[in-house]
Image (cartoon, rainbow, N blue to C red):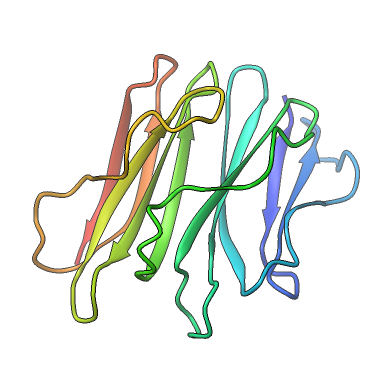
Length: 173
């Protein structure tokens, strides 16, 4: 299996993927995952299954406001890096600020995405998640993970086992 490197530092804030062999040598040039979209694309995360298929997620700023990302998108790829369809939206599209996201995948390609999103102005951030089947179809609606709603809940991270059970952690600040 190859290791993957993501680079979201390039202007104009596009998202790239690059394959490496087990020795750390590049296996070709970086490939554009998403780019040339309105606004900035950044904060990419990646997860892969037992067959080296993978999903890349990123946050997307699609408004005139600076420094806030308002959507989460994902794109699935086969074991050779060929896209399996177009980018798709993960969050419910509230337009509220999204600060960070993470993704985990099981051995068969089912995956879960979690993110931190604040509500209306002045509201604290909560942690949300959504499950997807191995074909990329949503398996659940957007769900809130945290029970506490006092103080921001941020920076989700997760892991998923081969069967699809997952653990989700975050900061309560």
